Image 1 (cartoon, one colour):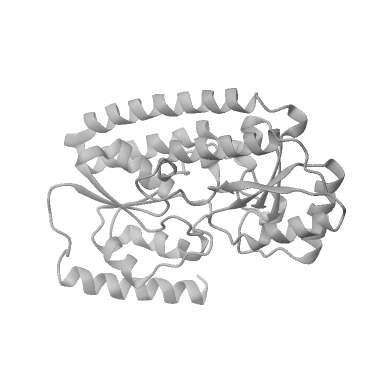
Image 2: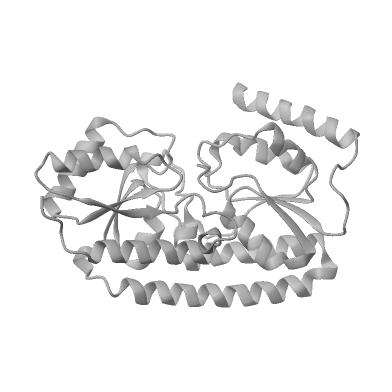
Length: 313
């Protein structure tokens, strides 16, 4: 284990042992306490677990999971958890070793573990790792629902029937969502289906729904874009007359604004077509604060912007 990872795990162990020694700090109301790393997973837990589960998310709206590190406030949530659920595939790279070590205190499950590796994208620039953004293919994300369902049922056999029923209902909703995405995308001419975003998070979306995807940064936002990346992408946008590019809620807008300026220098005007939810969902209580609402927002934003006439210089 790398020294930095060892230090993080040792710190977590010390804090957890101190917390456990003083007893659980959360009131015991009979519900399972589940900690989920990202909002998309927390949403599944809420949908499947219903009133039998109390779910807490570590990473809220606008948070980049690639760079997120466990904070002191997270330790109490982890110490009181009956179950910890994370994405895996190195999405939570900065706290991956902490999550792996958590299994000594509470069952810890990665929702991507059951996905057939032949279905995963392994871009060469990602150093042999898989693209972790599987939720952008709705049919692939459905497998995460089954993982959550089974993990909850194993911990709470008395609620297994509830979890199965809730999961079946939610899977039907996701199947309908997938059909809606395909119908909505079909409104966009194939030659317009080029999606340019701040980082390369939409690969599964592109493969599932017929888009070419171009990201300024790589799969992980830990890799920074340089001047050459900006110039390469701006040249392609100008040459192909791509009408719109998109910012992401979890990445500073200046990265895409730099591309927009470089395109303008090539005597072509590209507009920022809107903000997409990539590694984080919207605010709680909004439509975009749910997985289904997030997907609908993204698809509507993409199709609307790429359907617009090419802007004049």
